[in-house]
Length: 447
Ligand code: LLP
Image (cartoon, rainbow, N blue to C red; front, side):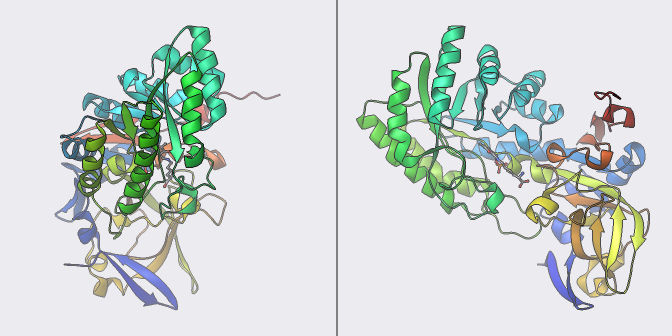
């Protein structure tokens, strides 16, 4: 099998060559035909020409397929997949998943409003997050969210007070922090006792007892979410085992639940990472959950949308020197912050294959480029030390960009945010227009 990634000594630095064909063989709905990169049946160069760059492009069938991998693997147990909206909250993405029957994991009322605007069912929404305000809770109760994933003792009484005021009963689950190492980047590890999330394992049973005393709360579940971009299944199983211990203790105390929610977190292959599959994860957890007789809920985000999307960006300026070669592209850290924020390595592949980029032997003749944006920060890079054959005007595709790409984008340096396009078969549609300059300060005044 052809290697996806090869590290090559180049001018004193180690450069990375990514074989674009070997990579796309591992990506759903992304492939080269006659040397042109396609998503489903559309040549991405046509997207770049028609809608401009930078531009996020999503494959609808890739996300539907990933979602169905979950539901198929979960078929033998009562389940609800609640897609984590923060990964990609475009209305077209949400409506695609809502039509598939997805529920949603939200962390703000803004996300709830998006879900409802996209046709999602409020009853299938779980509301996570450590800092819900009275107003947030009121809005969520009025819209009829399915369950609050409660993250602190204080939050319990706030929800109870608001529910009482509205004369409603609020469904709650306690997010337990199981103190399990997710073995991922520290910024996206959430299930350790040093992290701000959830109620400690030790406090959990007492907190449930407190909840039981509160008149306007209805205890329905238990949940956890230990981190994101987990490549292995072990930490999930360890967390599940911790939750099972608690469920046993709760049963002994006469507290019964309807569901167990294991959060999201399964990782994806960005370049050549070995990631346990959705089916492998589910196969390990389903038998244990079946024994509990509870509904199984999951909150995946990245594993549904990451590899369904690319970010298209054009090479604007080539700036080679004796020491370092910079390719300045029209996307920047404001469009995709993952490399700058988490030192994430994502693939950057040509949209038109060139013999010079195809094999590592030929690639050695190429320069090693840092692909950077035009933002005024040294931290503004998308990829470093990549062996590529580049010309000004080339369009590159950053793969794995469907999750935590657009949703984390900003207007830093007063840059307009990129357009988003969705492809289905041979059809394509702009699902979010590129921002225009006037929008950037439309809410401001000169004073
Ligand atoms: N549920 C909860 C409560 C979460 O906090 C998250 C993600 C998820 C579900 C979905 O996790 P996923 O399946 O997507 O791993 N911006 C970072 C990722 C932050 C994840 C935050 N929480 C990144 O770009 O890597």
